[in-house]
Length: 266
Image (cartoon, rainbow, N blue to C red; front, side, top):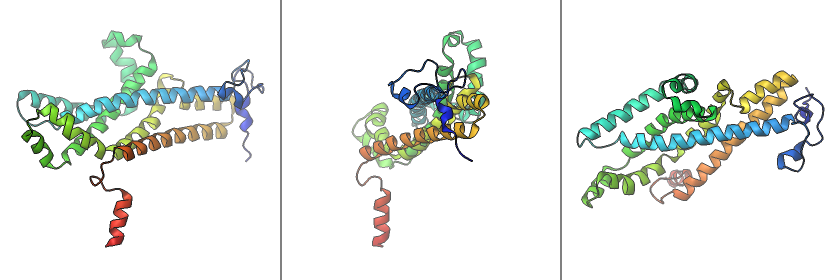
């Protein structure tokens, strides 16, 4: 079956070929009517916006909750914070992300009235961020607990308070350990952003559904959308790989090359 890529150069209003097609991506030409390619690029932008905002929320909240889960049992406040962070993780990781999107869009604004003024993509990003934060919190907790106990003892011996020990000793090391699983979660945010179509955010999945109905060219439409999702996830992967390389402490975490060299030596 031959692919008809010319569908992206047709007007979304009357289906006729537009004057500018690929040049419109770079602002070199302006169509009288938007083409499907214009629509595709705008949908990609919405996908990246929702995923980026959701990831920012997930990282901030996830690191905080993961840290709180590892607080030492030094009083009532510590127990309350540990209990709160545990409840947070169990709540948000056990509710499907699509259900959370509907809760934030339809239910929660009915009780928290200021949320009604927020755009729908903000509500979706909050739902996506909180869902992912529960998973990141568990990874941060595991990273902190994997550190040698001597590091916490050394921080205490230096006279550091608990917040200072976490800020200057524990978290800088733990976050380096969890970068690989954080990479996976960051890529998952790109993929999970597709649920935004359920509340009419004009992202890639919604574009694909509507464009396929209008053009009857589902193969070309879904191939293009799939390629953009894959490209976005790959871009996140490369950024996180660069961060991991720049933040690596020599001798603390063995790289795959180091492990291969060691196995060959034996």
